[in-house]
Image 1 (cartoon, rainbow, N blue to C red):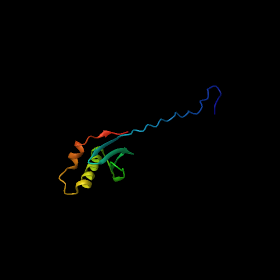
Image 2 (cartoon, helix red, strand yellow):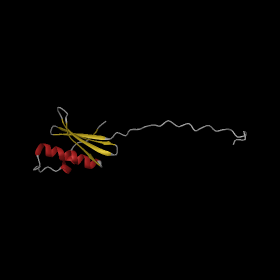
Image 3 (cartoon, rainbow, N blue to C red):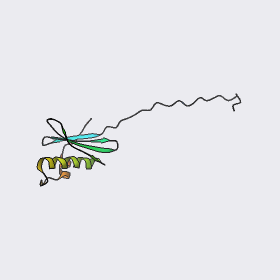
Image 4 (tube, helix red, strand yellow):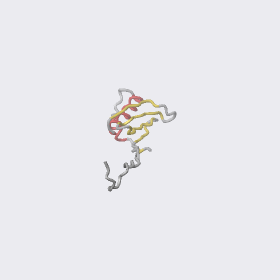
Length: 102
């Protein structure tokens, strides 16, 4: 019960929320393929496409950037050279020129 002597406080006005989207992604080209990794909802989405017509050949989800880049490189190697290739996904992913994408 109010005595009337104290000023009444109105309900607190909600402050406007600001939604910031942190967009992190990287892409690289190798032997006619486009490899991309993008942070989406706390996991990295991996996509590999052909450079000409852009159909997605491979999609995967990984827990960190390094694993995502290696997954993209591993698929690219298997797609182009098969399982008998001596090329290592870890080496390829570290040698690719990953550019920050928007």
